[in-house]
Length: 289
Image 1: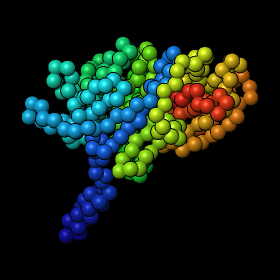
Image 2: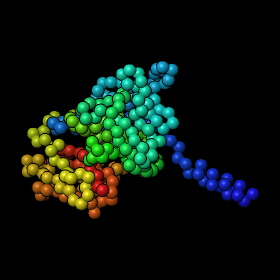
Image 3: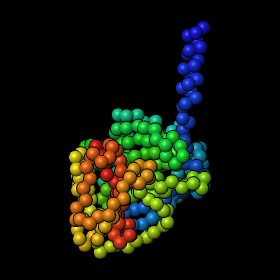
Image 4: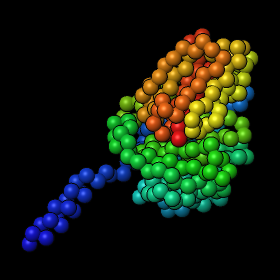
């Protein structure tokens, strides 16, 4: 009898503390994403669910990607988000059931175009699965890397929200620029990501100076990395944030080089903003090993 009671107690504990899966494709959710081109353009846009449609006997959410003017058809089931490609074939966009060591196949990012409606190509491996308190909920955070083709490139998925690069899990234009998730709004509550402090929509023209040339090197940071700052860039301030958007460091820059040591931060993903005369001119990320 004691063994039975002990077993029931253990089962009760497991079920009591288990976290229900948080849905991502819920109407009313709004994602703000910024696109940073290698030419210096910054273009902000929104992604939202605008309705439902039945295709091949299944119900799909209509996901409107404002910047492309296109609507993708996605559905969510048992922790997996499926999207239809041009041939109406289902392609897995996200799989929140992945475990460390699993392989996930991404779209053809190196060709410089988005594949949010489904494609296949590059393989990334899950290197970490953690639970973090983000946007008022305990959420699963999955880290994925490709140490062969893109050794300095890491993706992060957040349960119920999507990729830190945007809603589209492939949304990193390696050849022509990059995209970053700025805001996620649910039930009227907004959470900021990638160091953002506002969801205001902006369109900035090409700068005289190409700030995409200002990068931390090496990245990931193993001992110390340097940010070279040409005088004509006019950069005079840096903000550094953690994955949840909490500011860790805000510092004025008066020299032509800015360095970060791996002893300053724990291992993980961080984001930084660079400012020139109180205007943000670049946002990007770095990894500390």
